Structure formats: structure tokens, C-alpha cells
Image 1: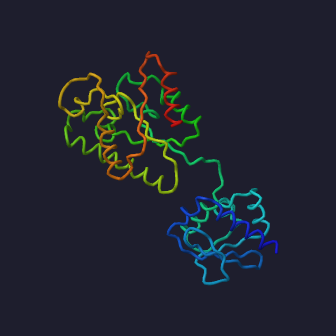
Image 2: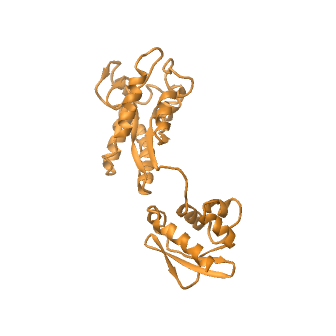
Image 3: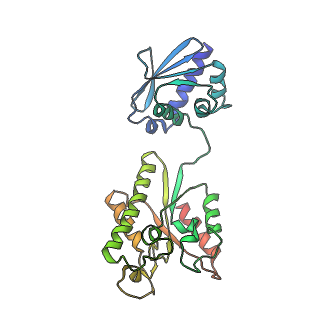
Amino acid sequence: MVVEKLVNTMLSRANENPLTSLRLKDWDQLVKWEVEGEDFYWLSKEGQFVPVDGGEAGFILRCSAETLQKIVDKKMPFFMALWGTGDIQFEGGFGDAYRLGYVFLDDKRERRVIFISHCWLNINTRFPQGAAFKGANEPLVKTLLDSGLGIIQMPCPEYEVLGLEKYAYGDIILEPLRGKFREVAQVVVKQIKDYLALGFDVVGILGMNPSPSCGVNTTKGKGTMLGTNRDTAEENDSGIFMDELKKLLAENGLSDIRIFAVRRLLIGEPGLEERMAQLREYIAG
């Protein structure tokens, strides 16, 4: 009776988790629990576990009542018992074990993420004297961390296409350059779709004004990047990478993903606090 109560508690915990339907998607499996001589069967069906009387199980779990009690009392994570300590033994595929591990995932993540331009986190890809910090824009990164967001660093299109020191600058121009930047943007769109498919909140995409690549509201030197002119004046437009990213989002039905930016900071420039206040407003929606 004690074992049955523990197993049923695990069943309820799994089915009450709003993410279980996403984590069990397209996974039809019969799971068997073997706990101190007692057998229990769960059928994964339509995003929920349904208790059944028996059958040929494709995945089998074996553990003691003591282990199960620790998991129920949250003194031992299910995933750790399955993969770390070996307190739960299993027969079946590794993929099935991971499915169950994620069903019983219980940690502090808020499942909110933001995609940010590469050089907010790694200023080493920026142009000479374009960095006011040692390695990352520390105030901006701290603002994002304090908000509880997961930070996803987008690839740097200039690095991917032109090289770390941009030796290929001017060699690839006009539509070929756009095409290369579009390929980089496709990586970002795929990641966004993956997160959304699993129920994550994508807070938005944070670009960097007035970058010729990652500018959102303003851009500078876009013509020089494309090889059309030598005008480095700032204009009200988006950068080349953001152009292509916006197009791809629209093509994939993701036009509602917010795209915003704060202005980069150069050595000696004022206005850092104002920029961070603006960022906090963006994050708040």
C-alpha cells in the first residue's frame, strides 16, 4: 500500500506538470515500475500518463521504496537517481530515460530566454577601439542576469562571414553578403522555433544600435558593408543581419517576436544608466 501510494504520487506529479504534454509529445510508451516486488504500469498517451493493468513494457524502472520516498519528498532528484547515483536502474533506450528525466524536472529555471547580439557578451569581435569593457558589456549582462532571463548569444554575422579581424571586408558585397548573413540568421530562427515548441517564453531579440549588422532602429556604415558607398553617417534603418532576421521570422510566422536594441557604448561615452533603464523597460514588455 505504501509503495502504491508513492508511485501514484509520482504519477500525479507528472500529469499535473503543465509541461508534461510537451515533453511526452510523440512518445507512446508503456513504462513499468518494479518496486520491491510490486509492479505498476503507466501508458504514455496523448501527452499524459495513464495507469494500466499490464502489458509488454518498452521501458522498465527498478528501485527501492526508500529511493522512491526520497524522490517524492524532494530529497533526491529523479534525474539524479536515474543518471547520477544509480538508485534507479532502467531497461530501455537512453532516449526514453531522458524523456522521463525531463518529465520530473524540478529546478529553478523560469523558462524565459532572450536572444542577444554576439558582442554584448564577447566584445572581442568588435572593431578596434569599439570596446569600453574588458570582455563583455558587464552592466548589460548583469541587467539581463538580474531579470532571471536565460541569455542566448546569437552568432556574430561579421565574424562568421568576414573573419575575426574582418580581413574579408569588402570582398563579399551586395546580395552575396546578404545571402551569407541570411544563413547565419537561419540558425537563430531555428533556435527560436525550438524554444517556442517546448513552451519557453522568448522575451525578444536584443540587437545593438547603430551596428551596420545588428542595428535595429539605427545603423551606421551599412553601405560600406554592402560595398555600395562610403557613407558612414547614421541613419534610421536596421542593419543587414537584422534585415534578414526579420524577413526569416516573417516567413516562419514569427513576426510577433519582439526585436529591440540599446545603443552600444564606446570609450568615454556617457549614458550607460539611461541605456540600462531602457533595457529594463524592454524586458518588462
